[in-house]
Structures are given as C-alpha cells and as structure tokens.
Amino acid sequence: MVRYMDENSSILEKPPYSMASEAEFITRLRSLISRPLWVRFTMNKSSVLSVKKTPGRGLEVRLQHAFRAADEKTLHALAAYIQDGDPDSGVCLDAFLKENQGLFHLLVRKSSPRALEYKGRHHNLAHLLAEVARVHGLCVEGIRIGWASVTKSSVKRSSIRLGSWSAVFRIVRVHPVLDSPAVPDFFVEYVIYHEVLHSLCPVRCREGRTRRIHTESFRKMERQFYRCLEAVEFERSFVRSFLG
Ligand SMILES: [Zn+2]
Image (cartoon, rainbow, N blue to C red):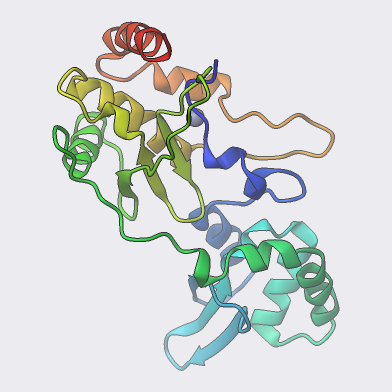
C-alpha cells in the first residue's frame, strides 16, 4: 500500500532528470559569478535563457526551469556564459538543451496548472497550511495548495494518494476524500506537513545509487509533527476503512 505518492516520483525526478530547488540552484550559480545576480525562472518555450546587464544592479537572468537539472559542467558553462558571454560555453549549453529537450518541452507554460481550489466544504486548505507553518515555524512562502482533482474508477483500490507535492510548480495537493467532517483538522495538517517537508528536502539522484525520497532524516522530521502519534493512528483506521 502506498500512503503518499509524490509528483517527485514522476518523470521530473527520475534519472536523468534530477532537479535542484530554485534556491539551491541560485546559490550554486551565484557562487560561480562574481557580480550581483538576479535570477527569474520561466516556463518559456523558445527564449530559455536571457541575460540583462543593468548598471548598478548587476546581472538579471531569466532561465527556463529545466536548467535546474544542470550538472556541474553545465552549470559552470552557464555561469561563464552569463558572466562574460563566453562563446565556448555555448557548445556545452547547446548539448544540454539537446539532451534535455524532453524536460524543456515538459516545462513550457501550457503545462501550468489551473487555478487551485483550496476551500472545501469542511476544510480550508489555505488556513491549514498557514497553521502548519505557524506551529512548526516553517516558511511556506511561494507554496500554493489546493484539492487534487480525482477521476472515479470502478476498479477496487489498493492504495490511496492522500497528498502530493509538485516540485516544479511548488504546489501541495490534497485528496478530496479528506474533505469530510469525519476527518479532523490535525490529520489534514499532517498530510500537508508531509508534503511541505518535500520542499525542504529536495530529491537527489547520485550516479549509481538508488534514489530515495523518504530518507531517514525526512522521516525524523515527519515524526516531529505536533500530533504525530494521533495522526498516524487516525491514518491507519481511515485508510483501512476507506480501502475496505
Ligand atoms: Zn512523500
């Protein structure tokens, strides 16, 4: 039985795509460039990289999200291109674009999600996200939340995905089955908390190693949820009755 599945486990985080978080990527890029650098990520189809030199403000760069999958060599080439317009770096960047065509295509604007519905009949996800952040002192700035859209299936379920995290869009989605008076606020918060932790623990793929999403340190943080024992207990009985 899979209790949580993450969009992390989709194509975006599978080899060869291993994407750094926006903050992590910007930090790495800034460490290679001696001038002040401002980065804005885009979902553009054709203009995937542009550099603007503004007097007194440094370099303003617009980059397609797919660059977050850059390896060390590509990152150095990118830094050289941004800083000096180094023509040699173009070869490396072209190779990266070619190798990752699929990822660039996947991340164009058309795949942007529709407006999110966060108000349910019984639970308001925006309020619960704010509560999770307040209780646990987490920064959730830039994270959006909404009820997942689900398709009905006549096939008997063997698992249920109660929450998901989209690293690309920075969205937490919650299964609408939890929008019930039988589900206490703290349990919805627990599901949200789990997904928000994914924003803090980006998935990494190391060559030759198996990728792990729910690492020991992830589980340790998860157990710090303020009502963890009750939430785990509730989950057990809820999932059991839901799956029959
Ligand atoms: Zn997870």
